[in-house]
Length: 250
Image (cartoon, rainbow, N blue to C red; front, side, top):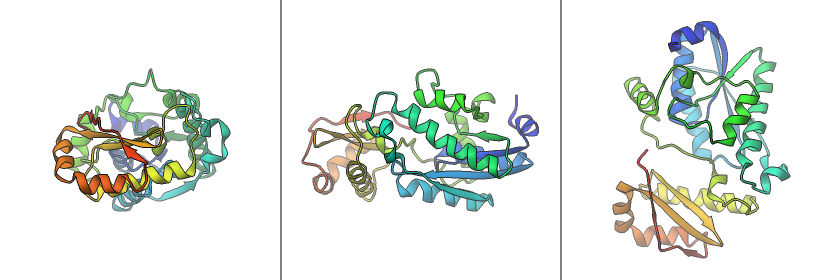
């Protein structure tokens, strides 16, 4: 099925917009082919502000109405306890809120940015989305990550080169209780490194210390700005692990 035919069948569709390239490209396609569309962004303690800012900027450029849904995920003890299937409970809560808002606005369908390159079999979050009946047009229509980035670049979608981003909770190891303080440290530390030019990276918490993951091209940058980067990290963590894991280029 091609994407135009998809939206001919699902003419009035709500889009879960995260601020990443996948959901942004989906919003572009929905705006182009769907009869009616609205975007919904969820702001919880797990989403840094720049993700919301990126989402709103894309929606504004496309001329799509957008609603921000504020969600207190830290009020859910199951999520806070951080089990290995935490993503299932978190996604279930986030997309339940989106589905509820969309239904209120008269939308029968909700779609997300899952694409044909995503391994949906092993991820608990995708199970929650499927249970709620959320559609994944990019996956159904064969849009790979490479194809999505090319589409976004061709159509001047501002986030076309933005690296894949996972929520702040993923920086905290399974079984470690998630607190507002840990999330805030993570966001501030990563914002600080972004200010030095880092893009494809993670700052992971481990026993009070920071574990760095850097893209191949950013290992050189880290060596160049190591003193400044370490100074930022040590504002929020007790120490920095010496081993740096190389991230896949995204």
